[in-house]
Each structure stands twice: as structure tokens, then as C-alpha cells.
Image (tube, rainbow, N blue to C red; front, side, top):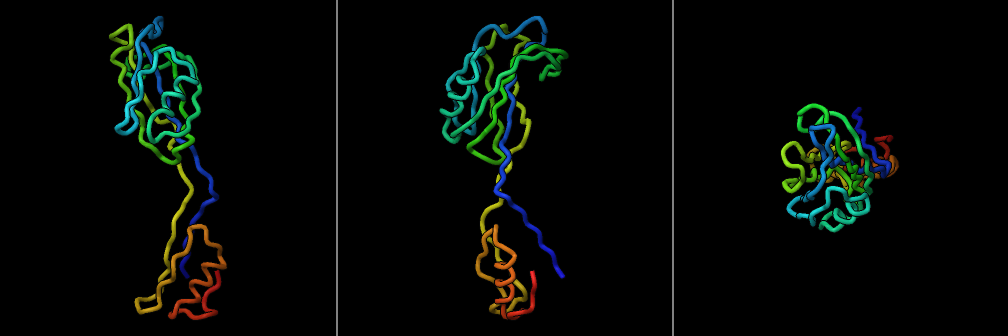
Length: 178
């Protein structure tokens, strides 16, 4: 007996990435400038250091390949992404609704942020996205002619898999129960 298990409930998990503006001096927040986000080879327009969620969403959805995102904003104090100790900053949590799946992490350029020196920006993946299983597969039993099924969809039912297996010349009509 051989068991092959596949699973798909058409459930996708969206990718979530955090864009954090920080300053290693807790008393300071970034006070000016902008950041530039890049997705793949596509560069977004500069985004102001104090942009709201809607402005971030608009900038990201203006990039080819990004159709829909949800952006939430939080201000926080905690450990510095640069490893310099405690920091104070702003985090935009970006949830990718389209594209779905595990996508490339955004790249960021923060050279215009002020004050310069200990002010920076980081991008971290909080949750890798997943997408539902798709496509087709074949079943084969033996090496002779007639031992390979036709294409079956990834969401084929047990009855469809059973019929495909029982249609193989090396198994016969009632040889497999799925």
C-alpha cells in the first residue's frame, strides 16, 4: 500500500512585511526626509517619513506587480533594527492581498531621512505568504504503455483518483479503492 497525501482548501495566507523607521536615540524620531521602496526592479515614488497608511498603500499599489495591500501604522519604542540598542520609531505593517503567496521582500533606501546618523529604516518579513495548491498531476503504475493516467487536477476527489488508477492497464477496473 502506498499513501500520497495532498491538501488544499483554497486557503491562502497573505505575506506581511514591516517597514520600520527608527532612531537609535529613544528621544528622537525621524524628523524629515523620505524613503524609497523597491519591489523587484520597480521603484516607488519617494514616501514621506510621516506618511499615513493610505499614502503608503497608494505608493505600494502604484508599483507594477503589487495590486492590493492593507497598511496599518504603529508608533513604538523597542530594540533597534540596526542592533544599536533601544530605538524609537514608526512601523508600517504591510499585508499583501494581491499578489498572494511568498513574495520578495521590499527593499528600501533611506538616505534622505533626518536627522542623519542614527536614523534608518528596515524591512522585515513578519509572515511568509502561502497560496493554495494548484495545477495537475499524473499517476503511474509500471513502465509499460497504458500505465500513466491522464492529467488530474490538484483538487481531484478520491473517486476521480480511484477511477484514474483503475483505468490503468496494470491495475484494472476494480483493483484499487481510494
